[in-house]
Image (cartoon, rainbow, N blue to C red; front, side, top):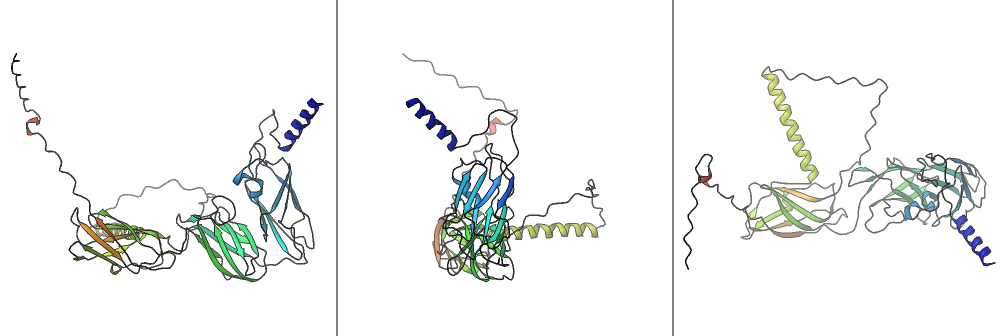
Length: 409
C-alpha cells in the first residue's frame, strides 16, 4: 500500500511540470499560435476566458520576467490578469472577469517559449467587445530612453479621469498603440519597467503626457529619472587649463539657455573671475564640431583659390540595385537632460588655490530653480621631472668605483 501511494505522488509531481521530450533530433523552431477564441473583432461575446492554442507545449517554469503571466496584457485592466497554463493552451481573463459593453484588447507579447526554450519572435493582439460596438479611437506614439537617445520598449498606460486603465507595450522601435478606447482625456504614462512588475518603482525612468482623444498628433514619451527637487552644484573640477566642469546633483532642463551671467567665480580674496561661456557637454561638442567643419571648409576654399588639385576621390564598389539601407532609428525631438555644465575661463587659474563657484537661475528638469554654490581647490602642480645625469651621456666613460677602506680590527 505504501509503495502504491509513493508511485501516485511521483506520478502527480511529474504531471505538475512538463519537461522536454527525451531523444530525437533537436527541435529549434519556436511555438506557433494556431488559433485564438473568441475571434478578433467579435461582438456581443461573453467568454469566461480568451484561449490561445499553440502547436507545442509552452514552458511554464519561468520565474520573474520569464513567467507566462508576463507575456499577456489585458486592456482595459482591473489589476493583474488571470493567466492559466494548460500545456499547449493558455487561458487569459481580467482579474474580475469581462465587463458588459466593453471593448477589450488581449495582447500576446513576443518571447513566449517552448520546453526547449525556442522563443516566439512575434506577438499579436486580439480585439473583441462584450457589447455591440468597438470604439474606433486609439492613442499612438513613440517612447524613448531620453538619456540614451534611443527608442525604448516601454510599458504604456493610458488612464481616464475615473481611473480606467488601458495598457500597451512599445515595440523595439518604441512605437505603441493603445486602444480601442472611447474619446476623452487620458494621462499617458510610459515606464521602462526594469523589474517587469508593471508598476512605476523608484529609480525607474518614466514620462507622462496628457492626451485628448481623438489626438492631433502622435505622443512622444521621453522617459528618464524624474523628481521634484531643484538642482544644486555637487562638485567642481578643472577639466583643462581654461575649463571648469560643474556637476549638479539633479538633471537640468535641456530646453533652457545657459549664460555665463548665471555663474560667479571668486577667489579667496573675493575678486571675481569672469566666465566667458557656459554650455552643456552636448553644446560644447556641437560648437567644437562646427569649428572643425568651418576650418576644413576654409582650408578647401584656400586650396581651390590657390589652384591646388585636391586628391582624387576613390570610387567604392556600386551598391546592388535592390540593396536598401535601413533607416536610422528615431531620435527624441529634444536633447537629453544633463548634469554637467562646462564653464570657459579667459585665463588659467593658479594651482593649489581655493575658489568658490555660485550658480543662479539654473533650472532643474523638475522645473525648480534654486541658487547654490560650491568651494573647490585647484590641483597642485605636477612634481618636477628628475634631471638626467650628465655623466651618463652616451659615450661618456663610467667613473671607476671607489676602493673600499681596509677593515680594522
